[in-house]
Image (cartoon, rainbow, N blue to C red; front, side, top):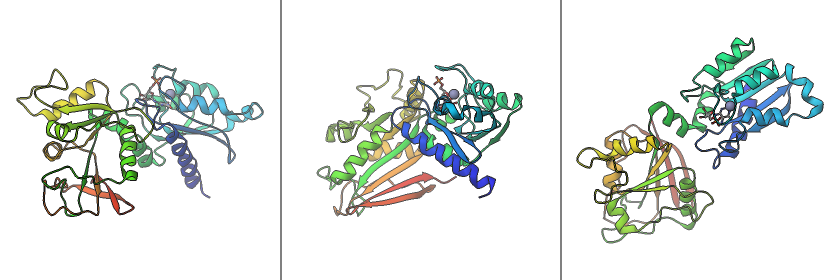
Length: 321
Ligand code: AOF
Ligand code: ZN
């Protein structure tokens, strides 16, 4: 195995470890770290919870006493640039320098304003070799909410709808039960993985949806209904475009991700404004022969994943680069 393949293999392990923090690191990113000496992993860790130790801290702490003398001849792999700032915890870049490892391999640069390359800079200035950008796309994908929030200054937006096989959301008269018990569970999983969920007033009045995660474990997302008579945020001016204002309100409150669950008018306003990152469509095998038409998928959306569960198909789309 060549060195590049080895670097990628250990970075893949970092990503795998990082994912254990999926429901608990928020608003911090998920990060994994692996310490390797002569092709042997001597320590590994991940960021478990916001306010607690970062991945690097946990990885160093996991090294066994009898292996600690190997640290100066080791490489530490981290899926996100080690931090340079004093946040809730001290800078990981300083920790790495004090441990005196031989080399640092970083998945991607941290977009957070207080870091943004400063961690890498600190480590390089201490004379330690740093390689940046191993599995960069995968590492950024892992924290796509955190990246969008910090670079675009708005939450990551997921548009989600369920439709019939002939492209309708309902049959004109009622909301149709299109999800299966299993796909219902998956949509609650999606809710648990995101911080806020938004619907329009009409959808709220028709469905009385609780928008909670009762079929999955985790925290209920913040529930937002767009209703000019009951403004979700006091600063919104309903006489001008509401969508960008909602994202601004959420950004100011530190909300990193939002699911938009409809209806069509609400979905279309996000699509028309180009304010979306991911589209998730559930298609039921049922047809209705007429009703409210599902939103038109934007031209720059590409399908990245398609899974079928007992006849219900879930299609994941992203924006073409
Ligand atoms: C790392 N390793 O495992 C994580 C990092 O308030 P704090 O101290 O928890 O710092 C939070 C920031 O640190 C967060 O916004 C992000 O920039 C970085 N996260 N950095 O070196 C980690 N989770
Ligand atoms: Zn850190």
